[in-house]
Image (cartoon, rainbow, N blue to C red; front, side, top):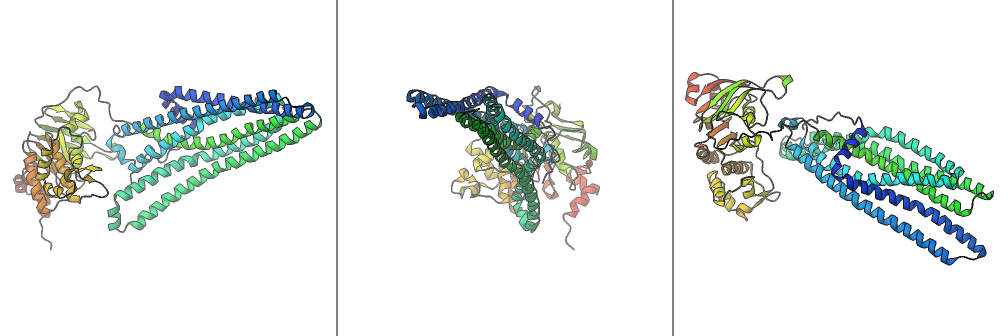
Length: 593
């Protein structure tokens, strides 16, 4: 599994993370402000309820002695119903607006992550696993959206309710207020202590979740290899280790956050007790009425309930901060050079390619992989690149395609440096068949036509006939419209045939074959080799091959060793030299002793 370059990071500044998140919310800020205003207004309306209820209680109490004024009482009830109805409408509007904001935000964030994937250098994915990227797109973005939806407006409403209730209690009775506040201070102290202790565990939880996704994706994609090498125990051991770390960090984070609610409930109950004791003493002395005690009990509930919401909201915000940290780390990663200003474009390509003193290193600290590579390729030539494993064969092709940028020298196509062209233009010049086949869930026709417009059914059938796949496709229930997926799978050789047919349908002016026939049997290889000869005719072709028998007819063979071209020429010329190529070629045809 690729190493996560951010695996050691800790969220150093949660405030900074949230500032970045709310700046990111700029397109939705108006809706967010309206939602917050609705939350505040709704809280203010709800604060009117206890006062009205106190008046109703006092009216009923007085009425028991002198007769109840039903008309006055009905008006009070109508006012109370209007207050709570208005609070309900504002709360619903706030929820609707927050759902709109969070879904827009999540949608835009996922789009930005998707765009970012296409902007970071290819080397970025050597440092981070695909599963971890998947976790950031799904789990982390969902966590951010859910938290904003559930916490932001409710925290604002709770803060308004808390301050409003405190104000109403103060103007109602100072002594009872002091009793309630003393209990609340204990809750605040406990909440701050818990938040400080639990922050790191929320970050560990999100990071371990990314590691879990990366491991599962890796083991699933290589399931056959795991089976063949009896690696189930090793895979299970690593899974158990990651799972244990995830369980531990999740347990610790949830344990700390789980403490908040019962502590806040206990503090709230303590506040009720304090208010009851002080209120009873004041009532016995005739300093307050029974209605004041009823109203104060409701104010205490409105005062302590926000503390519980603060506790829950703080827990959610910690998860969101950890998730935001991971998402913004990816969005802030270094991108490839912006090429929007480049206007040069190659259209009518002949296919002359020149490598001039090319140097390249994946990691400059570890030294160059390609030291001083020079070669001149004429239009229409078939160039074979051979050499031992690790010699730099695939690297040369990656540099030609601008998957990586060279550290020195130049690569020119028809005399134009590829650095002057956009990457999209360079990619349009080549059709490519890799050793690792890639097919997506879709019809056979869609896989062949992939991103190529104007390909006719005749061209698709012609390409499949050329690679020997047409007859097999005709035997399928839906022919070329058969969907590749769980119920319909191809053999490794058929997948490679299909990717070669895709390259033929692409019909680009130049061709790259990276071990394109490695998964094909000898009989099919002969068919495909003839198709390749037709495909390569008139095209500049670069062929990476370990089986040297397949490139004997190459116009030029470049022999690489340790990043340098040590020999070049045709097959006959190189064999006549009796050098490294000769030893390499003969080693493949030695009889077993």
